[in-house]
Image 1 (cartoon, one colour):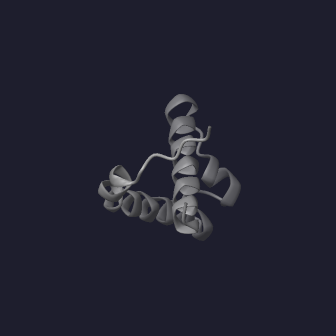
Image 2 (tube, helix red, strand yellow):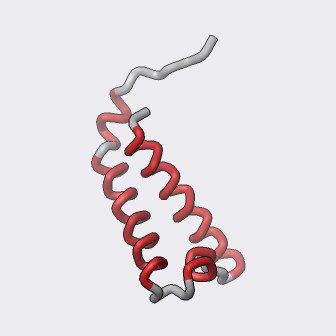
Length: 72
């Protein structure tokens, strides 16, 4: 897996967990960690999660064509 794929996956996990926390408890973890949802660092994290989603969406077709790697 390319390092960019790993980074995108990590960012999507962060985003998914953040949305899950917001949906269940109305708690924004990114905002809590970085000083509010309009703080510069929070906006950077939100932007990176969005960019990661676009990256993964654009690469969806090529991911479907990759051979499955199974460990024996």
